Image (cartoon, rainbow, N blue to C red):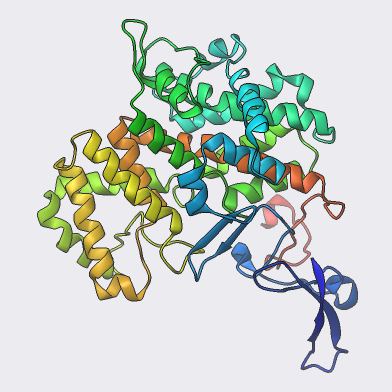
Length: 436
């Protein structure tokens, strides 16, 4: 970051002396006011619930322009990465800052592929969960448990340990997600197959059985790889901030990523595509396409309590660029699977049409987001709704690790310690029990 020629001056109406604060400029995006010395100079904190106007770190990884609808990984537009690269290219980019050349790609792909198996003891750990447990509950436990199985790479201050942990997490997450799925439905686990691509291997572990040969469909393989790329990183969102905050204490990388998985589970974050499909199924039970207009009127009524899931975004005030790419993939997959006339998918398209044309939604920029389309694609592929967030966690792991490594390497990093505006009782004395 560069020190700006501008300075910010904070003045007070009560006559207290004003405070001058430095302003920094990034390579792109809003300038930031450095308030680190504010408390020392004034005895005051800033108050910003939800961090709407707070930059918690400096980063070189991902940039979002919500007004333009722009998403860049290390400067590369998401549209180019999603159409010209695969997920492992994207992982390499996020971790190393540049796209791999031919030899680097070959070496990195081999490195990840050769670490996809998990310690066999993990299947016994998995068996301790109830079969009807939510996959995200299972996945949080499995990822956190990796620090017990791979304790030779748990020193977060050691760059070699962080590198080994990064490869292990990226390589083994598909295996863990597929194991959680197979355990839930009572099928035997399928071991990774090194001859397949990253996405192809995941499809194989998910849907193959020992009974017969499973052939990976290239259209579904490409669709899943695109889902992984589009979800790989997204700046300082809730789960990424959680990983950074957790890692700032010096905990091991597996524990920090497990914290990210737990945060991602929430319906306002990674669980949004699961919530979106549940909404569609609710409308279907109401009467399907014929009830879409009625449902949208309820959404407009603030007193109805009905929420439209899969539309709008906290940061994007324009069309989410990931949604445009997922929309293309959605059409390809539905056509490939012969599901264009499936009632739920027809319902989704009817919902999309109204949201793109109705003045209420257009004026509020409530465009379909990536969760809307990715949920439809995953359901078409055969992935159960409650596993959607697990797929998201799998994809986001590379971004989490890149952000964690960046934070550890930042000379300005300190353990995270937000402050508060206290509004509780002031100091008081404990009374004897008979006087309370």
